Every structure is written in structure tokens, then in C-alpha cells.
Length: 355
Image (cartoon, rainbow, N blue to C red; front, side, top):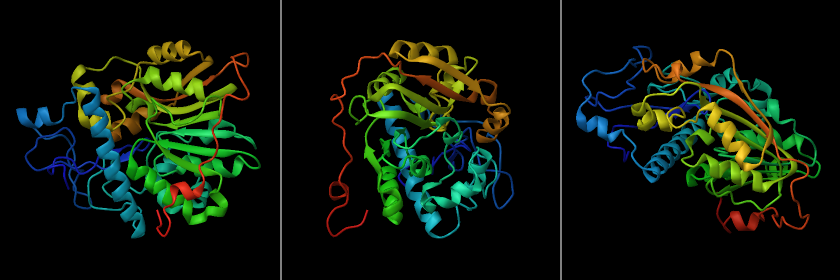
């Protein structure tokens, strides 16, 4: 599949994640297949070769970004075909979330999504990705302009959609073309319901949204993937209106992890290896200009983390947190500064073609 058999896809966990991982025989890699249950096996292989080690070590920011783009592009393509078959991801392939036949619906419910809201959105939008339901802390209101950083298949934007009317809209941002394509296709399944949602291709370090546009920014287990988190918070501050708020669910580090974990492709793409220390996140948000900063741990999440990467011990270093902050009301604001307008459908849907 282009990964040389070493990595089919890495399902970043019950919370960003459901990244399906599979390694070639003899690679000796960190994540092997889940125990003989529906045809899998579990636990790390022994005797990792030097080549296998080097293949899974990320040494530059650009290498990291490309690995993440490839992994999530694969998740988008695979998730689409599985949902189309009505299987909801039930395959014999191993999952870093535990069960070999892990169901995205059950994974999402474990993260705080209700069955009602999951069944109300386009079927292909829930791929079991994420580490929390941002709707529970976002406090959406009619007229809100919500920007979702790392919007994937559009799940959180679609869940937000009914709360934003009248007068509001949702803008999803993702750097992976396959994810943007998938989200746009999901939107077209009910254009009347999701007319006020749109999805843009772009990096969250350089958000393609005008100044002072958003009233609320959400992000579900994505900022940890960024190689320039200060840029993400600077950009978030720029696009928020004064009084606007952050409502983020993400993986954070509470204890410094070994360097080899920070560079491991599977842990980085799985939303664990690249996360920041809680104290560093607070410093970055303060530097960007945010106030009323709150980072709260989700109790009991270590067991979920443990299931994402069995036998690695990564749960001893990272967990999932709710991250909230506000752009001060007295921040400089020119009401004419934002020229950001909804993208016309004619610009995102080629004539005579469906997305």
C-alpha cells in the first residue's frame, strides 16, 4: 500500500484515536497485532533490527509532518471504504485501541459522544478519532462562528452545526487532502442541514481564516501533532474575535518522556509522542495573549492511553485534558478587519463532478 508493509495505518486512538496499526512480519516493531481474537495477536515483538528502528524514527519537522499526512490520508481512504460496506471498521486487522474488531461508534461513545448525536451526523464522519467530545465544553450559541482545527471527516463540525443557527457557521481546517475531500463529501449528503459548514485545506500553524472571525475554536486531539505549537496558538488568537474562546481536547505530557518515544513514528502519529508538557502549553497560550487558561485532566484516561499502545508504558507520561482559554475583550479589534466569508459551493464542487 506504499508503506512497504511496515505500517498500514496507525489509528490514533479512541480519542484522536482510532489509527489502525499493522506491522510487517519480522519488523520487530513496537506495536504488533492484537491477541488471537478475531485473528490478531498482541504485544511488542522482540529483537527489533537497526533498520526497523531507523524506519520508525522521525528526525525532522518536515519528516514528521509528511508521516502524519500519509497516515491520516490512509485512515481517510480506508475509513471511507469500510463505512461504505456498512462494516463500521470491523476488520480482522489489529487496532492500537485494543479490540481487533473495534467499532468507531463504540470508541466515540467511550470518549463522551452520545449515540444520538453520532447517529445524527453523516455516517462517514465518525472514524473513531479523537480524545474527547469538544461539544461538551464549547457552549455553542446561535450565531457562533466555530473553527475546528484538524477537522478530519467533519464529525465535530457536524455536531456543532445545529447549535449555530440562526446566523452561525462552522469552518473545518485540515492539512490532509483526503480528509478534506471526505468531509466535503459527507457535507453533501445533507446540504440543507450542513449548508453553513465548510472545509478548507490548510495547516493549523497557518490557518486559512481571516482575522477576528471565530467566536469559538475547537480542536480534538490534533494540536499535539503540530511541530510548531506556539504558531498554532498565535494563529488561534489572531482569528478569534475579542471574547472568543478555545475549547480543546488534547493529549498532554505530565512527565517528561524518553527521547526515543518522542521520535517514534507510531507514537507521534498516534497523538502521544509529540504532545507538550502542561506547563509549556500554559506558557505558549499566555505568550499568544490568552487569559483564563484552564487545563484539566480527564480522570481515568490512562487506561485508554494504555490500550492505544500496549506494553510501551506511554501511559506513564501522557494523558488527555480539556484545554480552555479566552481572548480578552479588550484585545484590539477592528470590526472591518475580517473579510472572511463562506466559500461558495461553486468553488469547492467542480461542475459536473461530485466530491
